[in-house]
Image (cartoon, rainbow, N blue to C red; front, side):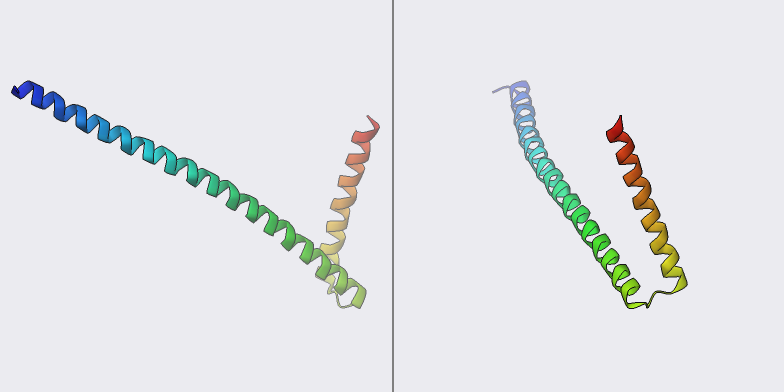
Length: 95
């Protein structure tokens, strides 16, 4: 075998090796993207759960009469946001 043929054979082997690595990295990348999406969904669900629990704590404090003035203002602000969102939804339904 000539030097040129050996050189071409080595290049071809290296290209095949690189192609295998590329394929493996693509597969790993896709798996990581799926894991990332699952993790993002879990985080979103946990944030919703945390928000719901905070709302429940606020309601319990209000019922027990243990709310500080700052807590009352925050609670009223949150209620106003909900009311605005409800009004917006009603307006969209009327269209």
